[in-house]
Length: 230
Image 1 (cartoon, helix red, strand yellow):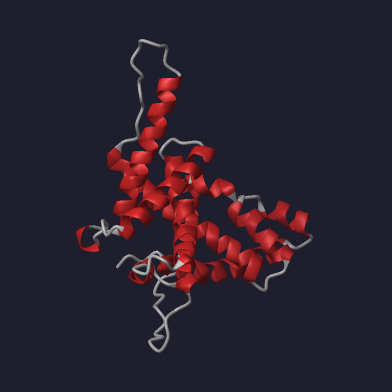
Image 2 (cartoon, helix red, strand yellow; image 1 turned 180 degrees about the vertical axis):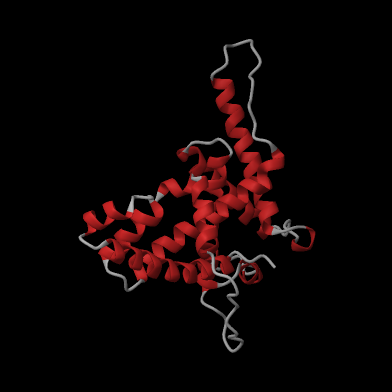
């Protein structure tokens, strides 16, 4: 589902499936599993900088977001992957050195700043390579004012990517039901064509689509909570 990383229509689909009114489960007796802890909970735990498992979870959560952000800011896929790696490595070093102060700004703002610097360096290097010797390179840098917007889109797309992956891997829907949903709701194939390809009636296609969307809403709500920075 790589196309979701840089597809504005995914933002609209996420808004369509986002659940309303989902609350946090009250499990005060024991901490939540690492993979489902909110970002705030992870940051509290990351004071133990030697805990490799915590950093693995943090990296797995934010690497695709930074890569998607870099794509939106003008890098290609390889450059975006490299920018994500460099950005998170720099954040880990800053965090270990005590340079990140949560009271002075949100985590996303800190990561955006690091990523922006890396993206700017890459774009300037590319511009210099394509400029004849003796001439000044013209660098088309992304507008800093749109960084928060692009980050928000990157987070939304990543949430949808993860929710769809969880749906495919962990749900009880059969392959035909999920295929009908993806063709109809994700690829916007006409229902009659979906019915013919999946060997279903048009009515069954709509039933499959609605069933999967209900489940997807639940998963999206759960994944969204993980990015809570409150």
